[in-house]
Image (cartoon, rainbow, N blue to C red):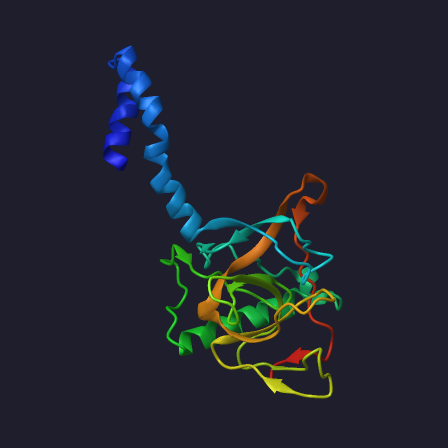
Length: 224
């Protein structure tokens, strides 16, 4: 696909294409770009419509959201700690980096390829407590669910349905819970079900913006 496309661009630039061939090129453009769009949609970014209020008020029924399916160059684009972060008692960045490093190590123990300088992208992206993830519903075939991550693999958590109870999250799994009053999905899910993490609401325009990712309340999730 790419070589014929590059040849067409070269002909357009040097003026060697006839007007009829130029028209044919523009007419065929959708067919040229469709495979690229499908690849990007399946690998890096995709959009979904929210079909219930289980994550309300952050995500409401009818919202269209942008989902990040892969993390590009994960060894280079992770946030770095600053001296201010180290001295700020209210900063969550140290905890977030600790969670990220432990999560990646646990993934490697489960057979996931390690992240290094040669890693171009990682699918699914590294997800953290507080992220809202889209995943294939364990309850309904061909259905996509949305929930917020409470705990990572090997962590201990207190589920919101029974705060006096302590659950252990399996190694290559996540514990997720809904935000809203409606049931939604909560419990353990395998990371193999993860489609990606929700990063933005893109429609309607009145609700457009980044999706907040608050850390779980103190005492709800911890490392043993």
